[in-house]
Length: 284
Ligand SMILES: C[S@@+](CC[C@H](N)C(=O)[O-])C[C@H]1O[C@@H](n2cnc3c(N)ncnc32)[C@H](O)[C@@H]1O
Image (cartoon, rainbow, N blue to C red; front, side, top):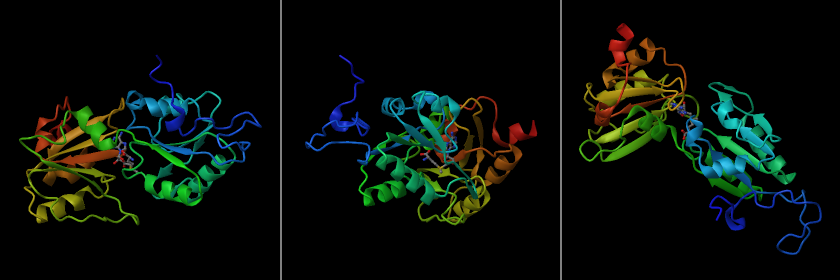
C-alpha cells in the first residue's frame, strides 16, 4: 500500500489542470479557466529534512512555486523540475514584491488553472502573513489549503537543545514579534516577564535592547538566561547564550545579522551549546 498517495478528498491540487475537456465531478466541463486551490505551505526553518511529506508532495506536483527569501535552494530543488520558481522575498524595509502584488500573483495563477504552491518559511500562520493571504484568496472565491510547517521557535529550540516547556522550569511559552507592522515594537508586555514562562522573540535582533529593558522593568530577573539562535537548523547555525541583561551585547559582539530568534527563560540553562557562549565567546 502506498501510504503517501494523495487522497482526492484532501489534496488541494488534485486534478488541477486536467486535460482540456475533462468532465468535473459536477458534470460541468472543467478547464484551465476554473480557479484552483492555492496551497500555502510552510517550509520549516531551513533544514530540508524538516519539510513535511505533504509539502514535498505538493512541491513535486506544482506548476509554480511562489517563495520567500528564507527558502534556500536546497529546499526549492525539491520542486518539480519543470516548475516555475517566482521569488517574492522581502528583506527588511525593502519589499521585492509588495504584499498586494504577491496576493494578485497567486490569484492570477490559480485562475489560470496552475497548481500553485505559495512556499513560506517556518509555519505560514506564525508571523508569516498566511492569514492575510488566505483572507485575500477566499474573498475572491479561490479555495486555500494551509500546510503547517515547523516554526522557527520549534526548529531553533530543538537544534539548540532547549526544551521550550519543562515541568520544572516553564509551564507556558509565548511567541512575540520584535518588529511591528510599522517597524516599531508592537508587544503587550503584561505577564511576559513571569519566571515560569519561556519567551521566543521573532524578528527581534534590532529591538533586542529595548525588549530586554522592558522585560527587566516589568520585573524579570536581569540574570534570566537568554539564547540567540541565528540561522537555526542550517549549516551555518550560531547559538549564543547569556542573560537577558546581556542581550544587546550578545547580538552585537557575535555579529548576529541573519534570521534569528531570541529565547528567554530558565529553560535556556538546558541548552546544549557546543562552543559559543555569550560574552565569553565574544571575548575569546
Ligand atoms: C517573517 S518571520 C517568519 C516566521 C515563520 N513563519 C516561522 O514560523 O518560523 C521571520 C523571522 O523568523 C525567524 N526565523 C525564521 N527562520 C529562522 C531560522 N532558521 N533561524 C532563526 N530564526 C529564524 C527570525 O526571527 C526571522 O526574522
